[in-house]
Length: 372
Image (cartoon, rainbow, N blue to C red; front, side, top):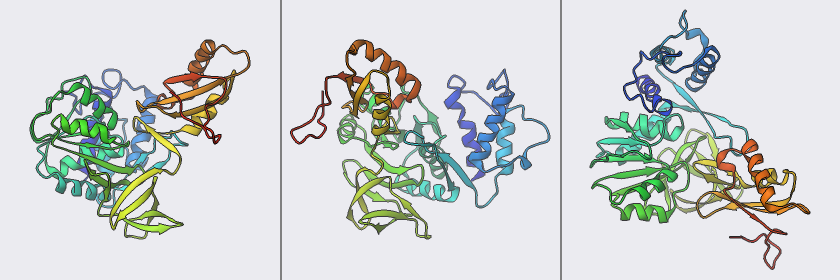
């Protein structure tokens, strides 16, 4: 397992050094390599220690000069049994939370997927491996299958060959569909980190994708359930069971631990579920959980905004309806809003479309209505 973890550190270069395919462990950490100054090196060390459960007692006597030295530190400092790894939530709906997982649980999950995909001959990864989905599908799964991994970026040729498994998120699948007229034979895809719309999945299958899996899960739990399009319901992964709680459901792993589901669900069978809506009222934008309430409250605090409402647009981005304060020109207010959003909201949280009017749109019952 430590060899897989170490290999994953080596592969993390693709997130930051996309033009260095021949990167090796002899790459300097300083100016001629990663370009990290002394403070940035300390920050990087702290990040590695948090992710891999290390401490300074295992550090060498001399500061690391090469990335390979950090790889060695992880290998030597990682216990041979009971290894754990820590990931963080996105922080888009509140403070980022650290989530620690036994590597054995993640390896078991990858092993289950390997059984479902035993005929795959290569992993084509469009996601980096520094989040849980990427780690399981682009590090642990290929290790379980004994197949190579190749990294790709949207906007470059995918160079797919029969037997490939393509690992992506919904936004990437949407771009792939627009860029791809016809898939080669025997290409299977997998999607996670955000809901995969059935219409998009239908289009990918129509373009020749041989199969498309959708993984339901979270940073706190890892994978929870899986469906293969065109199924609309998810089958629980082997480690999970459902327990009733206050008229709803929660997860248990069979060892006594209980976990809240990220969504309300309908239980449609003994081990089959259908998510019906997030518990926190958030929506997913580009794989990030975004609170509509938080965005609307942020807009209302902008000088010149009397009221605001936020909804999900048809293009899977946010839209906002803004009621200007007395005498405020909408065109000038739009500039103020754009500047304020750039300073106070993350990119996924910023509404792409602004509509202005004298009052929020409401139906005959007085409830907030949609707008175009």
